[in-house]
Amino acid sequence: MGWLCHGKCTSKARLDGKIAVITGCNTGIGKYTALDFYRRGARVIMACRNMEKAEAARNWIVENCKNQEGLGNLVLMRLDVSSLGSVRVFSEQIMQNEQYIHLLINNAGIMMCPRTLSEDGYELQFATNHLGHFLLTMLLLPKILQSGPARIVNVSSVAHRYYSSMYFDDINMEKRYSSVYSYARSKISNILFTKELAKRLEGSSVTVYSLHPGVVDTELSRHWSSILFPGATWIYHNVFGFFQKTPEQGAQTTIYCAVDEKAGGESGLYYDDCEVAKPIAKAEDPELAKRLWDVSVEMVKLGSDNPFK
Image 1 (cartoon, rainbow, N blue to C red):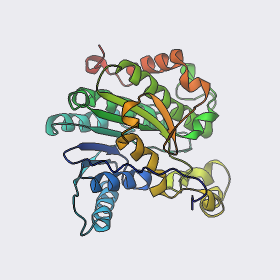
Image 2 (cartoon, rainbow, N blue to C red; image 1 turned 45 degrees about the vertical axis):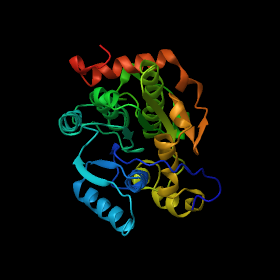
Image 3 (spheres, helix red, strand yellow; image 1 turned 30 degrees about the horizontal axis):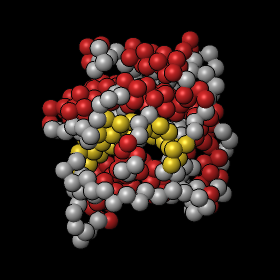
Image 4 (tube, rainbow, N blue to C red; image 1 turned 180 degrees about the vertical axis):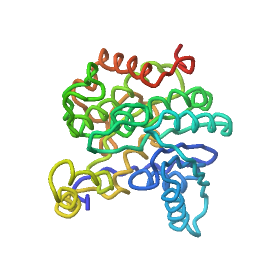
């Protein structure tokens, strides 16, 4: 239910004429983020892997806003952030067809799944939660910079606190895989990426944010029964559901970072419940952030597309 303690974005800011790209918004907090932006008048590009679910999400949003005024529009585009090829195709289409990008919401993610490799040969949680969004941001950044003021929001998690290592010497965790440590690595990567990107964008009209959405009742726990113990997914939803946020509540901090006037004057920070929060010390390590950046540039084969070259 999530009623015990949760922040709410109270900003009434409109997004008329603004273009927002949201990854993974066919369900969960991404869907409610898209709903909110649509109500504020934005052109919302719903970047989803499953187009059938994306179509259902768009229909649901339209139905929920029936007879309301000041709505934006919803555009469906296919994007699988675990695939670097898919990210490149999507980015090329956006760069060619969209005049501006005012908001980039890196929301798509997977959580605590069995060890799997992406089509590019990278550990799947790291590939999906970090590498895909890193490449997407780099490829779209020239247009984002032209669109300023603009914001980039990276959805992280309090689970970054379980971070043990970046495993640079075993990037695919072949020697010893832990779904928990893999997820934590991908989520601290979101925070480190935010810190380093904000540093590089200092003095520009683009601000960057990372956040913990809260413990949210979404589909992300679907692998828990196979990873932790039989029935873990059921327990998460049914026993602990009383303490969880709904997806709508979970979307509030994302929305806050994207539209709030006060947040607009901040960059590189980590948020929880619509407030600045403190991540673990390693998430603020500038040397670790720089090394992750350099390794990511090589892994996604950024090459001549590097906007900071």
